[in-house]
Structure formats: C-alpha cells, structure tokens
Length: 139
Picture 1 (tube, rainbow, N blue to C red):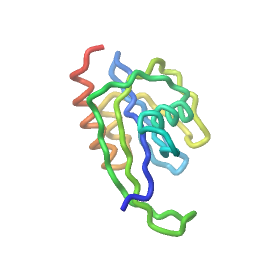
Picture 2: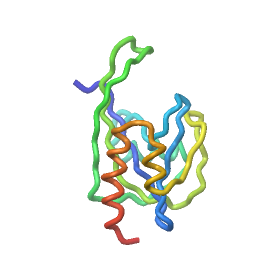
Picture 3: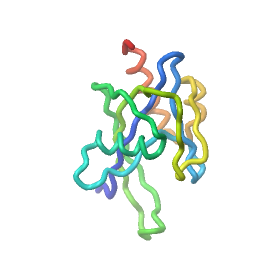
C-alpha cells in the first residue's frame, strides 16, 4: 500500500544536453520532485514543485512517464512509509536556478556525470530511460 505520492521532472537543457540535479539538505543528489497536494494532477504538482524548488519554467514533453516506489522510515510519523514518485521529462526555459531552502546546491551536468552524481539506483535508472527518450526528441 502506498502512503505518499510525489511528482517531479527530469529537467534538461538541450545545447549542450545537460540535466539538472538538486543536492538535498539530507545529503543526496536527485531530481526535483514533491508531494501531490489535494486536487492537483501529477503534472500540476510537478510544475508547482519545480517552481518552488528552482524557480524554473519548463516545456513538458508528452510520451514519457516513469514511476518508481521506495520505502523510508518517517520519524515524524513514527512508521515505515511507502512512497510512489511519478516523473515526466521537461526542457528548461532558462538555466538560472533559484534554490529553495530544501537544497544546498544544484548542478547542470552531461549524462555521464549526472549518472555518477545521482545518489540512488532508482534515480539512475530513471535518467537512463529519460536520456534515451530525450535523445529522440527534436528541439
């Protein structure tokens, strides 16, 4: 049973092709994402979270939707939480990132370096799939 659902983006810049990674306060590197709030669609939540976390506006591409689920221990809720995260692909309209308080750094990285920097295997698998999709796009 899933306790929480979040939505996010694999954000890229086309020329040269680079991916946006965020360094979270907890210490890991990942893609921008956040909780879906009441009444929001996946896409609305992903756009809102991206704007809150980075200040970026994006162009969203249809045809890519990747989901993964993971568990973590919530000390606030005093229990194990099952979380599903839904990702789409989006091209940034700017490279100027305004970080939120949830992050301590960010990086625009080419595919190989982004793959190395990501902390979790599920994020690395997501990047592999997203990169394959993005390389077939025309800008």
